[in-house]
Length: 323
Image (cartoon, rainbow, N blue to C red):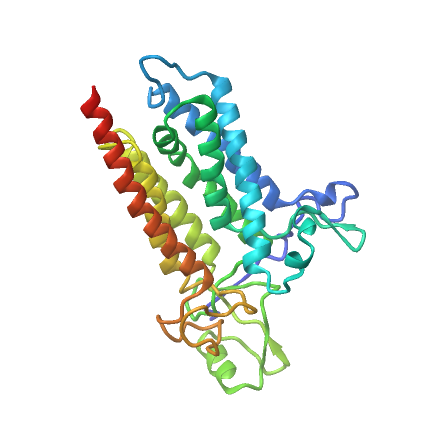
């Protein structure tokens, strides 16, 4: 009995693999489009509930369009900058920063491979602040409405990662472990590999290199950081105590959940651990004290959520006192 799952061979990064012209269409890009569409419809629903209206201002559909568009532009810019400057160790982008937004490599179209969630988070915040300042509306109120939509859309982004067979987790003996085709392989002659393979019923007698099953951490994130977090925020949207409360729940909730899921997700091999034993293998969780780049950024998100909640509460309290 096999105690693992082979990644479906029919899943390809391209939606139409081998089809000329249509070969550039990828599942990941489609999932991004679905995520943005969901964000739009959910934000529109929240707006219809009156969450964004004031005594002197009634929200229009054009406001929803432009708000989301501005947020998306800044989100993509932030996600790309973080990915190239923080997660890329070649320092190539530091030497030639114009390549950050150059979608070609050696004459071939590559798109913008590499996006950082944390960069998108901070970029999106800047974009929302810019829009709210320009339209003279409450950033706290609008950001609360926006986070009612973001997590559910984020779910599809992580599904896109799974369909791409990327951002997989550490090796595991759990029966739902998945053998991802592009994951790092290990020599079948190593004793620990033999012991690991024996536990899951994997025959490695004729294999020089062995691809071991891993946590499908993309799906963990899709469920907990996406669906579960969205349900929590969706419930509190009509029970919030002050403007900014939902934004704080989102930032803090995501940071906490992602921090712990990072123990199942394999860090970038070239980055390793920022805190702890830098020589520890990244394919195994040998110590909770080994902290990855993603966990540090999640910790900063948690701190941001605490400060944001405090400021939101104080601002809302002052606004009520003036009435």
